[in-house]
Length: 236
Length: 194
Image 1 (cartoon, helix red, strand yellow):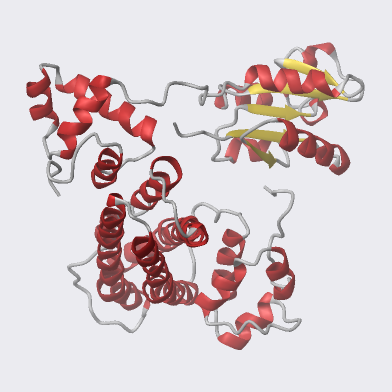
Image 2: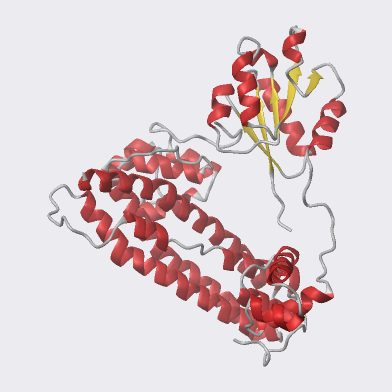
């Protein structure tokens, strides 16, 4: 199924073409650790150069271009390792780049707007970040190491207290609060000053929502179903 | 209220006709997502729920049985036959509406518009007095049961008020609703529980 205006990325697609068409691909490249100076290299060449499983790269690039991953995926362990690396890097992006940026905007707004609700919004956003950090730390320290171990054929650990089902259950909806914050600002709370910072903040919230949505799709529709297949094999 | 985008499927082998339809719909029909589908098999596999399927009857004229099955599968959809060549009457009868390519464009737009029910019709977005009472108690940390007892209504009614509050304000979480309530002077910072 094709949408009319986006490219379906194939191994022979030149990366420069998809960046020009959809610059949010830049963030994807960053998460894969790919340098932006891509020349005329194709997807396949870039994958070879950076040791990324092409299958994983294509699924994610196409997700960024609006194509959902096919159902019943069963990816190779190389692809899953690439995807886990990608997810870890995106956690880092959220924690060290995106959230500090947004916190900076709230502080600026607080300093120059006399509105009783700004302090509360700051608190609301900080609570949200704590929640997300807890989730990311759980993934980085518990779920992902377990997955990597599961994918390693030499791994000896037979008995595990952890299972992908537990991961699935842990996966809570972290987007609702962002939507609340955005609706508060767009529908209900009137701030007088620093419209440029207000815009950057609201745009930042939209961007964050979109990034997190892709992040959850990668986890729920790509990672979990494939890992479950590995788990069944191992337990068989 | 959350605006739901309508999914429209187009099954049309000709690229130029598809592009024409795409541009026409995107410019004239609000909140629509257009999906180009290669054939009726792909429609069967699609995860989307379609409000409208615009389809060239040529694609189904030799596969009527499958087509009827598919119509049952996507039973909420309206099926519009886009006709630009000779099609037998018994095939045409299987469609809800027929649009001939020589007709004025407005005919097609009218068919689409009158069959897409917009669930985001203008409605009162202000909270009612009762909803304000419920919101006030909510932000003070009371449970549904406690609110019901206090206002002499059933918990069921409390839940339905809560649903309306969320729909009208667009705010889902309790801390978010608290900020809303304070910004509208429905409750004060001291009264709220956090």
